[in-house]
Length: 273
Image (cartoon, rainbow, N blue to C red; front, side, top):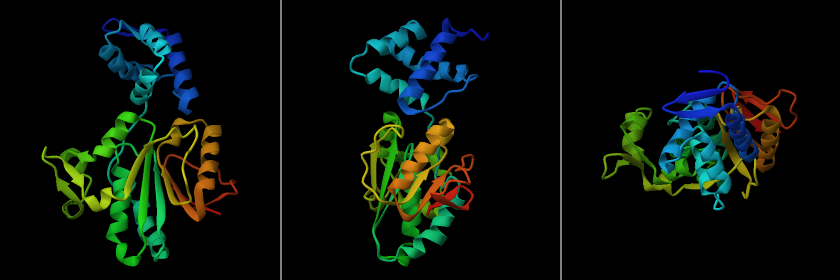
């Protein structure tokens, strides 16, 4: 392997092609791919090169440029975006919602937003947290899940999860809130599914959303943006939160302590001032 190209099975990712990939994804959705990620980019884009039966990366990038429909560019975005998630991920956030957020809702109806919802585990976990403690309030909850990947949103809308995914769900919760589908996978009960709405959204583009939201979860997404883009998105979240609303981010992410618009309540938990 050299700094100029990466070669496997005859397909090379030249340095200038890698730089073009970086520019394209950053310009579209703010994701910054660091140098040193050439092997990752190569392996992901090879899926599309093989599917289209193209000769290599230069032909693939030319194909995107010439595709007036824009469909292949969206597939390009799909394969380059990361969609790692699981049920009850960073569980203390859901404990915080249970202990600090739900008691104050009472009979109010609220909206929560999972920004970067991936295949739907986070929105479903939010719904379970609400239902498990619904006796504390008589309100109604609507949950919006958004992601930039069409492919992963299709999975979220299907809402089918295999045994490996369900390993993170306690058996008592699984029995109560999931049903086995005909193909052996598991699907959340209708009561949960009726609370969920999914849509495609580019966090660095326009947000055709109607707030205010009581909770916004955007966890382990902003690590792929530079600091300026992170600050811009955080301020846009602020504008869509209700007074005193909550923003949850990933534990590897942070909001500057001198940001006057948010108060830090705990690890990766912030409240709109």
